[in-house]
Length: 280
View 1: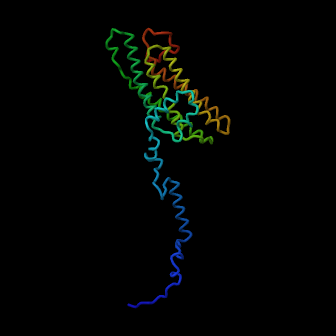
View 2: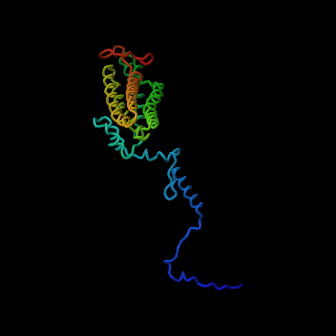
View 3: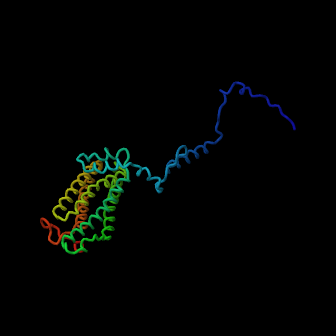
């Protein structure tokens, strides 16, 4: 084996201060690496930190359900207060949630179904107190499916469609999560109203439904109209009329479909709208 003597490089004797690190990757290779990192970042993945879940994974929605019970309760009852017009900035900032709206709408479905069945049983018993079978609580599960379709369509479907329409019109003042949160929490008032509508007095029920319509309607208009007003096209603001009409329709559906059970001899003034056939 032969050894070849190599002369020492004089620069190595000058100390480590003169050591340089040089990349031997070509310009094209460095550009490809940067492009690959940019592509990963655009898909929600960052190489030098924790990976973010994609839109189609359940982990993506986990932060929207990470909220404590105290916050949810506060966001529910503050929809009934007069200062609710600044609800979005005061109560849903910095992060809106989906946990509260989901349970608000689900509880409303349960309240409509159970209280409607209870109202039917009370009306049947008061109509014929001597009949023991009239006091038995009977459940109409057709009303349950009606409540599910009606409440979820209005509480989730309407804000999502409104958000898509506003995005198409160039209005991006709020996110879809904020839209669903505003609508979901806005239906909280119907839960106590559903409980009180068990009272078999038509005029009392109409007053309760009217108050709930005004309270929730004012809340929605006060929080949605400022978003519509940011649009460059002034006719966009007319969407609030459509939303108000839709809100009135949902209030009327709640009253007619779930609380049209009356005693044979009605208590108090006559109901202005007769019961729907097959319900009373």
